[in-house]
Image (cartoon, rainbow, N blue to C red; front, top):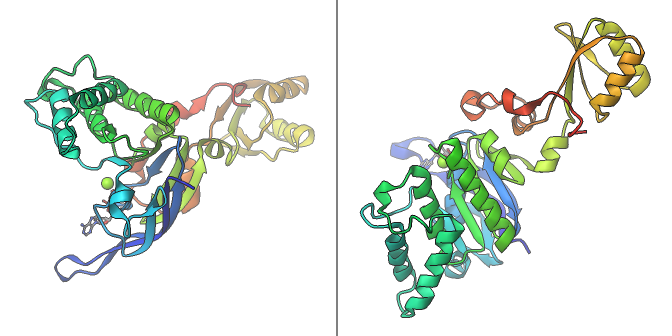
Length: 335
Ligand SMILES: Nc1ncnc2c1ncn2[C@@H]1O[C@H](COP(=O)(O)OP(=O)(O)O)[C@@H](O)[C@H]1O
Ligand SMILES: [Mg+2]
């Protein structure tokens, strides 16, 4: 049984001030298992927050069902939500209080009848350590960077020992260092505690660094659900060859490797599972001068574009220029 099961969920918002109703999420199904870090990605307005709010009980599906640890949210709400930790909007914190004081306060709200201070303190110590904030625990929140605040937010979400962690755009506004820290924390939580983590973002490049599975949503509809390996392998690497004799190179690729290559702007382009080293060797033996052979790994962006057939709007915002990150000079590690 998966920790999270979403079955045919649709959410229709009533039109504001007599406007037309809006279908924010449409017939959406997926599940998440322990140990998985699932990226829930899509452009702004795609329906990510709406879905995460339904999973955390902050919004009610128009139809369909959601179960957490086998408990239906609509029928066994308290049981279902008891194992969910979440940061949906900016977490509530008292800025003049320390990170530790905020956690103590939240703990006391969650455990009203709990009198055991030792148990409280040891839980707070462990969540502070899990997010790497133990050394700064006594400092007021207002002295923290945005990334540190976000980490205290994660610590808050971890207090109740959740088996499902839901984070809505947790890396928004963070610098690369802050993003890396969040990423390392999530990877640690998933692998050490077998936690199931669902994290949304409109930034595909960030998600590709953090997650081992991706669910892509566009206009409320699921367009793809793939593991990181599947994303990498979905089209195979795309190779580009710069040479003085493109026509001969195309002929050799076809003859020796059964590769169908095409000439684009004087360069030879093709997809193949054959290693760049082997291709180079064969071309050189046949007298073709190779100036450069580059490989572009298939990215989430390619998956998104091919699964929406380029229909989606807002691409520039969703997909910052990733070319640098995705291009490697040689293919041998990839092959
Ligand atoms: N409370 C609401 N009432 C009406 N429409 C809403 C409400 N919340 C979100 N929407 C609309 O639903 C769509 C999806 O929004 P949202 O789930 O916030 O997307 P995302 O988080 O992917 O940016 C958008 O068109 C948004 O304007
Ligand atoms: Mg959102």
